[in-house]
Image (tube, rainbow, N blue to C red; front, side):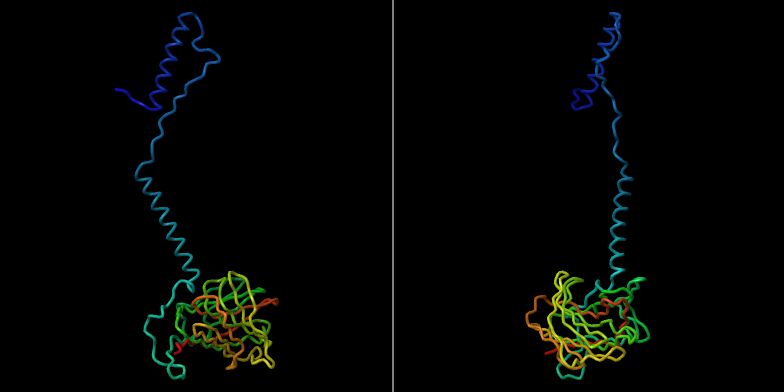
Amino acid sequence: MTVSGKGSNRGEEIVAQRIKAQKRAALGLEPERATAGRVTSRPAQSAPPPLLRWAAVILAALLLVTAGWFVLYTQPWRAGLVQSSDPAPALGGGVPGEAQLLRYDFDQPVPTMAQHNEPGAWAMGFVEGHYRIRSVTSNALVYTTLGLYTPDPHRLETEVTISAETPWGFAGIMARVQDGESFYLFQIDGTGQFKAVFVLNGIQKTLSGELAPSPVQAAGLPNQLGVIDDGESLTFTVNGVTVAHLTDIALPAGDLALVGGSKEEPGSEADFDWVAVYQIP
């Protein structure tokens, strides 16, 4: 039987070397020259047992599942979306022809909104009938999406109060949210200032100016914010006054979000009393 491969060649070399050694010994010489190369024989490396291989595969799968669960658990407000094909509730909002898609009075937790606390940085959650967003650091924007995606024309309304103790803080709403780096933002602060901002891939561009007098009430007083998305433009309102109308819309339909945060001065707190979204004709 002829066996081919590296193993048979190594065996033939060992046999030849032994024959040469016997001949040298018969002549009274050392069995091996000092310069002769040695043939090293290594034991064959056996493959790991099948059970061990399956254990490695199962462990890798468990690690992947655990990692995915962790991401969804720490970011539940980005995990689930309610499609617009779901049945709409009865008419609401006091405007004929509008269908109420959602309304939250925050008397109980809303599963699609964030409840999370990052010590020393920010916190968001349901507190005594409000949805509170608090920022500890400066230059922070903290938001929670509502988990509502609808490509149909719609409007959002909400009421928010910026704490009188943090008038430098801001609160607002986001529209057409794609992710944390692409969205439209409208924000007010406790000093009466406001602005509309377009964020694309993390790069900000301010789109609106100021009005005199400003319709924004000071910190400690409630402000009603709204956005109308008719499919081609975005209109932002404060206490019933139109403050920004954007027509060159660059983002597709997306989620909606509530926002809080701080600018140069660290620390802010904003309480949202309710939020409602309506489908418009």
